[in-house]
Length: 427
Ligand SMILES: Nc1nc2c(c(=O)[nH]1)N[C@H]1C(S)=C(S)[C@@H](COP(=O)(O)O)O[C@H]1N2
Ligand SMILES: [Mo]
Image (tube, rainbow, N blue to C red; front, side):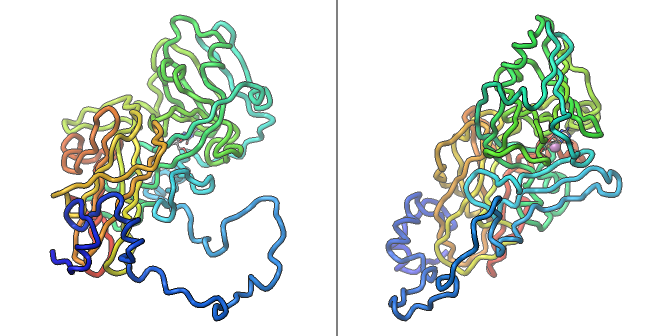
């Protein structure tokens, strides 16, 4: 690769393909090498005075909305099974249109097995029954009086990134379609342990079968240990009441565990001795391994990351200095490091992680990059605090049957063409 002399004196390279040392973007901006981004300032007197500066603006309103010019920032409606299962519906978070780590409530991904029910909170009840000393029933108002905790956690569907898992050729679509079934929220609710202690779990009560109030009666068996350690009855989502899409008026939250177990519209917690092998955990949500056998109860989501800026469907704005930015997470705990490659995996540089890095939460990473206009492949590889590393696609595929689309966490390579198009590729 050739670089002009002025570039190489101003920039401090960390790896191939133009990756820059972590602090470089700030110093490059200061040195004026982020060429062509800002225009020279006009003298104040010559500057145009726009109409919004000359008149009064709109009045205060009861519930704010994004700017009208941002109306195209929407969830992607994903309908791969529309013909066979019409009640099943999905939408993906447009991560390539967002920054930071918290997902706005209106853009949280959705997976509904039987559509989104319209629940009257005054009539909704949560029952705790089975192997307990005192079977209990709670309405929303009663739950409001319990002590609550707040924590930021990702939620990811076990079927996230399914197109990369099973399609023979990489699908050309954005992060919303490809990886949108993960979102990150500050959840607030009552610790499950508080409710279970009130009901008095009998010594033989080792599992809890959680079920929702929607039509398909989605139900999952959950080990009591998880319920007692960090299970939450979530009532609030980023400070406001949980949205109908996310389980209004209440959902089960199991930090880091596959989305399916986080039962929405929660109505029943049945304490049992053993898992009951519901339809959702025997037929569905079991991974098919390479030898054809199936794997049940993969609870924690694997370590994973993808670059959001730039990403597929986006176009580079000419050669120059850019910030590569993306998201990383792990169901096992905190993200320990994210490495980025700009030469298809030949060399790697460590990205900066935006703090505080929280356990089982989306973590933003970034790294400065000088794109010289030549074609190359960008990718990110996350490692979590247990030492687990995100696998290459071929290694992930070798473990599973060709038809398996669950728990896909392989590295996402993005091809940048000489024309500046960013495309999904398999590597
Ligand atoms: N009652 C009920 N709970 C449910 C579902 C459902 O359809 N019904 N979908 C599950 C699946 S498969 C996932 S991935 C998550 C999705 O949560 P979200 O729609 O809030 O993103 O909720 C889970 N809990
Ligand atoms: Mo899911």
